[in-house]
Length: 228
Image (tube, rainbow, N blue to C red):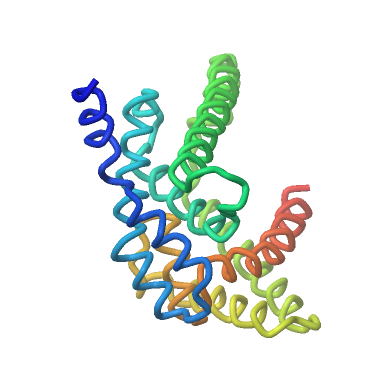
């Protein structure tokens, strides 16, 4: 009996009452700098360890680009951190563990769909493949990309003329900076983009994602018209 209790404490030592309290302190704090310190010093190490253990335990390690997915999962946890409500009776560890597991299950399903589409693509006849795929025109691709970016900038100018909220305008200005100076910025994954926008706008991650959604929809409409 004693051994079982000791083993249980050992397995959960990375997410203790200290981290539970830190999450509540983060949620109830209205000071941005204070929240950043709480997350960086206390919550993030526990989240990272939790994500790693769940990925290993449920064999999500087979997912392609699993390290990048871990970063994306952490960003997702940050955006929903304030949704935790201790009054519902669950511990923060249980709450975020379930969310993390379900998030990776969704990635597995998404990967399966992509692999199915890839398999269908690979079934294209050799004649079509030689005619359309192996003839690669670099000049044509560069010209198409240039035209795409020119039209995208015109689209962004249209967004800029809309009646935007203050935070939306901050995010749009950050987007313009990232697009105008791509070679001057080191971006390794999606998480780095969010961090750059946070630094430029001085908004927190949740605010960035909330206001970025408007321009995601605008871009999706623009891309649909471009491809159509």
